[in-house]
Image (cartoon, rainbow over all chains, first blue to last red; front, side, top):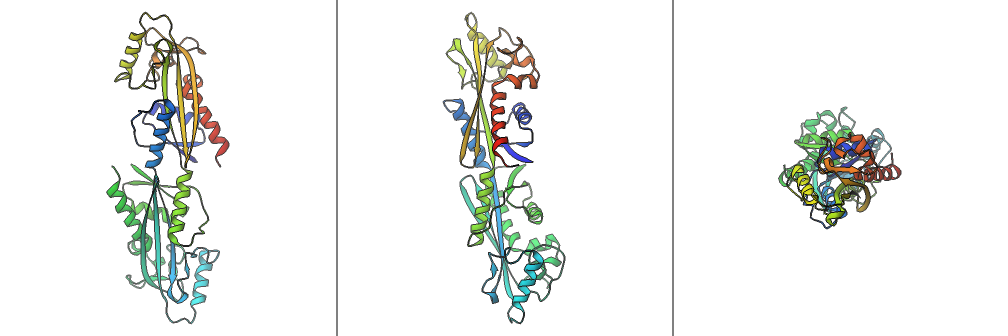
Length: 185
Length: 185
């Protein structure tokens, strides 16, 4: 359902807005501000702006860098082929007969809070397996063996095991630490 | 609970982020963008910005204008006294012995979509009752008799009856029409 936020702490106004906005999920936006503007429009704008500035959004991008391929597929990891299976097959094919299989996963998380942007990076070193192993994860997980692991691919690990080692887990841990330090309860 | 939005359509990534962000409500932010930037950070920033720009927030301010009081309490309607009861009592006291009791409620809704602001106004003409009547609504509702009604105060009406006549109902109806015309499904 389409979502919209209403900067109010008045349950009556929230219920009224929900009745008008059928087909929308109307959520209460936190953040009270002083209504000190000279007119109604000024106060309404001030409240809407404050609520929007309090909204936190993050996004993530990640890629696999294979040293023997000059860092490919890298930022093009998703566009490398049309499906996870085809991506894995293409990478294994390009590495056939190549001696070194060193690689790393990198992730960057971008957090937007109002006008501010914060970046959190994470990476994990490893090697590319000679054939896919495991059913977990997604993407290149069946052929990535993290160097700090026990020889299993990411796809052979539970979500918790992978998260503890992975590029994205590290970037998300940095995001969580930042959020928990800076956000009001 | 504190909320944060994750611009992803990957259920595995969403579950992973939830595990890291204990104590936060992690919501999926809609809006896919092309990941065409030269590096991971560029793609992550692009996705976070697009998701933030798609976030819709609105706020409302309303006030009661009494003609015989030069438009007071107006934008100061909430600050007129410390509680709903005290506000009503003060207004009735100021109008004691004054001949005209014409008044209007005004509401302004401010909608923020990314950097854009849109305003929607609504008003309703009426008169101030000589004593409070009814238990519904809030604020000055027990002493406001809308001119288009049947003599009952807003506080004597059901929420649906009041919404059909009220300043805020009219502003919300304009907001709803705009949203339903402009938003993608």
